[in-house]
Length: 93
Image 1 (cartoon, rainbow, N blue to C red):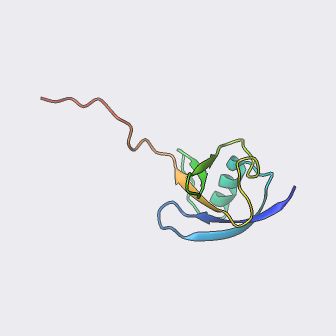
Image 2 (cartoon, one colour):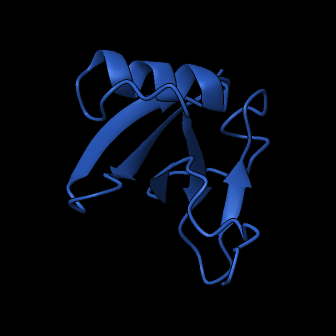
């Protein structure tokens, strides 16, 4: 279990939080810690974590930070899960 310093990016205001984490933490555990610390509010829909690189890579629920690709100095976006953008059938008159 190695420790890495990463920077989390807040989903709405862009605030950054530098944290040292165990690279063996899962994405779900990381999100729970971010909620417990007050960095992001508890949201029943949940959050996803994406490593900020030219091609964003998701660290999904049970994936560890290390196996998801997180490394020392990386920036990780915290993205709320919403149904925004889902196409819905629109009734026209």
